[in-house]
View 1 (cartoon, rainbow, N blue to C red):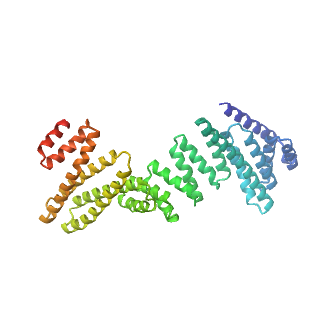
View 2: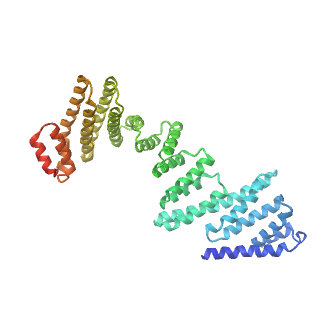
View 3: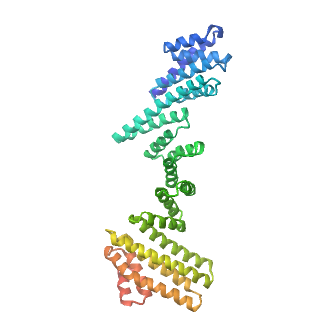
Length: 408
């Protein structure tokens, strides 16, 4: 409120001069008078005088030069950054005209005015941002953003203001504004530097704009085909989009390039599991031929061997195998169910092969389920799964014990 009153008073003062001067003929006003007012730091009078004179000489570059400088100084006199933007907007009108001048000195003058105004706003934003970080105090973030809004208006082709503005919005939970800041830079002033483009792709992913994020990551990968961080981001986007085949291709590259990074091995194994289940489900729904099933089955079992090998590697180096054991046990059980479903109404040889593999997976899942149950003895859902497996394998006594623990 105090800022509003101060700004209102300033505007009234300017208009007070303006209405006083407008009553005079332009012959009574001159560029020299405006210059003298500027020398005495009476910037409101400079603004009023040049505004009146420009009615008759709209292309007078000297008047625009003085007016732009006056507006810049008036803007800097405002205590709050949000009160400066109207002055900067009017300043830009004059500097834009000067930037198109035939005079190189006028073009240089315009650039100097813009550079000075931009630097003032960006420095203020950086100072507030550093203070917010040092003191862990978000109350300084919005004022920093206000300064960055001004900086972007003044020089919309300087990327650093967009980047810091996006980061500031993200810090205070304004994800949509964080995305919009980088998107504006990308749409209007592409190509963006790698770091900004990668940041935009990440924010789009976090906001849930999967296809836009994927498209941007793919563009980045075309530009930087050996950048593992870009591949990492694109993998995350593919996983969220449930594009398991695409994520598997990139994860295989990363497990070779960064063999010691176990999370990549674990992620690849998990994606292979999902891909196998999705493929089996698709074959069931599309009612493919026995020949097609057999051909696809061989490939899927090869993927299964790869996934199991990867999980063994992870388990050897994992301090807590509980999560991996649960994923593996659940996968074996679910995949067995798909195989048994797929075996229905198939030729005898194929049905027998699918059923045998399903039962093999169930048998192999039993000790893993038991380890999971030992860690979660009171969880009835785990015992329900164990009961279902024992029942299918005709392990009557074990099934009865599991049924009891599952509260069935």
